[in-house]
Image 1 (cartoon, rainbow, N blue to C red):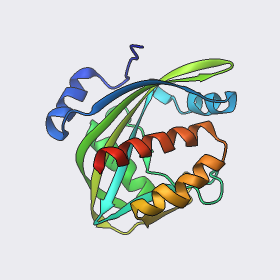
Image 2: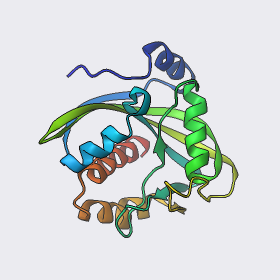
Image 3: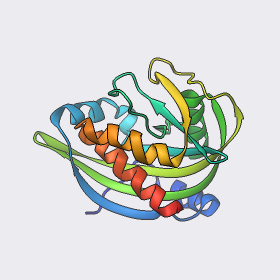
Length: 189
């Protein structure tokens, strides 16, 4: 499966020189038609990616809750690099909008080329996953329309209660977020 990325290869090479070469994974992920509709709605300006940030302050990790998440569901913040932004500017803007934190990107851990497959069609997508360090600010979402709340958790809570809530939701895109989180945690430990 050779999936395209909407972030130009030259940009990714520059990011890799600064933050390291990520582990590259290719996979296919079954989703619902509702999930497919939601993904397609997010594809402004040809977007086919997310930048997911595992933001740490000491041993605590910043997680966000969206208004449509089931009870107990939190996840690592993520968003898009907009046209006209550098990759780093987009990642740091998303971190700030979703958490209220100014961050410093640390390591490019993972690039996942995923084909989301629904009964009515599919979408090629790329998740770029980084670790980051919170350098200033208070954990409080700026974009309160998109993000309901944010909080600090430890990895035990993330991999326990929160993981279980995401899996029990039955939502295919939340299961993808669990897979992504499990992969990152396994790479960090």
